[in-house]
Structures are given as structure tokens and as C-alpha cells.
Image (cartoon, rainbow, N blue to C red; front, top):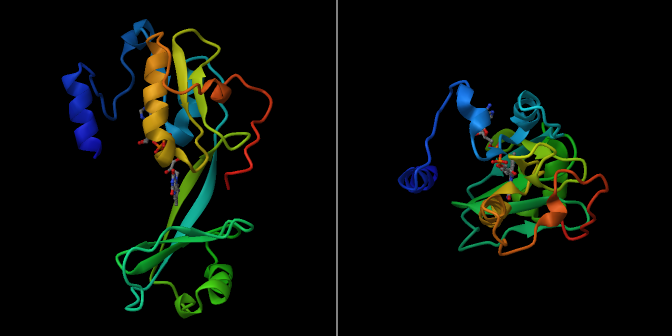
Length: 199
Ligand SMILES: Cc1cc2nc3c(=O)[nH]c(=O)nc-3n(C[C@H](O)[C@H](O)[C@H](O)COP(=O)(O)OP(=O)(O)OC[C@H]3O[C@@H](n4cnc5c(N)ncnc54)[C@H](O)[C@@H]3O)c2cc1C
């Protein structure tokens, strides 16, 4: 997918530079977007901008495959606690709060919700990092420095927000009206956004 997006962007005139120091003329660019996930504060500092994004360790335990797990299973989430799972190729991928290295409390939760999946040892375990902002919402929009834009701090919700955020931010940079008003995500906000629908 990344390749397709890159090819489309290159066809539209974008130049990519991988694993290189930023070119000296970066500052002369019409717009600079800081979209470096957990590395955004460091990139921002280099541009004289302040962005706060903090890494939070987040794990995924895999159990199965289970022959009884047939057909598509919707992502299933316990709203009160945040424990949830999704199904991939007959396995359950389980995520939740608490110690991200300790299978025990994930297993205890499965024992209540899906007892047949509460196996003594998981089949696998991955760890990654959420990129968390002060109020757990993305930091998207103009920064305090003209021409420098933020697009980071999605706090574990970045994949699902990416298409809409990308389209809106592109319109904002071009001075057009974005399809959605995402002004509330301004990186300059000091009051937390309150959204009781997210985990
Ligand atoms: C276990 C786990 C499960 C998740 N599940 C979901 C989910 O179900 N739904 C969902 O919406 N989100 C989910 N997320 C969160 C989602 O992955 C992130 O919110 C999203 O990847 C953030 O995208 P990003 O582009 O802002 O940052 P990143 O994906 O971190 O990308 C930043 C990029 O910037 C690059 N970079 C760093 N420094 C520089 C530099 N100096 N110059 C150039 N490039 C640089 C990095 O190499 C990296 O490729 C999950 C995260 C984890 C860890």
C-alpha cells in the first residue's frame, strides 16, 4: 500500500528522501509537515517548533489458530475496560490495558469472555508504541511557525484517521476549505478535547 501511495505522490511531483539528513533548502519549502510519529518532537525541535508526543508501549498477544473460529469475526471490544480482540486467519489478536508484557491478565479477561481462547501460553507477542498527545487526540494543523504544519500524536488511532486527516490537511495547506472541519485538532490547543466515544 505504501508503494502505491508513494508512486501516486511521485507522479504528482513529490520527491522522497529516505534516511538522509533534511536538505538545506528545506526551510525554503512552501510547507513542511511534521508527520514523524513518536519522533515528531525531535523533528519539531529542529524546526524551532514545540510538539509533545510521548511513546506508550502497546502489545498484541496472538492466540490460536482455533478450528472453532469460523468466518469473519468483528473486532470485539469491552468498552468498560478497553480489552479487545480482532480475528486474523483463525487467530485472535488480543490487546488491552495494563502490563503489556504480562499474558496473565489478558488470559484472565479471555477466560471470562472467550474461555476456549484462554490458553496457558500465547502463540506470539508483538510490542509497538502508541504516539500519545496530552489529550489522546491528534495534533493536526498549523504550528506556531508559519509554513510548518503538524500531523502527529494520533494516540493509537492514526490508521483509521489517516485518509480523512490527509485530505483535510492537504486542503488546509492549499488554503482551501477542507471536507471536514478538523480545526479542533490544532496543535496550538491548550485545553484537552473531550471525546467519550474513544478508548
Ligand atoms: C499495537 C498497535 C496497534 C494499533 N492498532 C491500531 C488500530 O487498530 N487502529 C488505528 O487507527 N491505529 C492503531 N494503532 C496506532 C497507529 O499505528 C498509529 O496511530 C499510526 O501508525 C500513527 O501514524 P503516523 O504516521 O503518525 O506515525 P508512524 O506510523 O510512527 O510513522 C512515522 C514515520 O516517520 C518516520 N520518521 C521518524 N523520524 C523521521 C525523520 N527525522 N525524518 C523522516 N521520517 C522520520 C518513521 O520512521 C515512521 O515511518 C496501533 C498501534 C499499535 C502500536
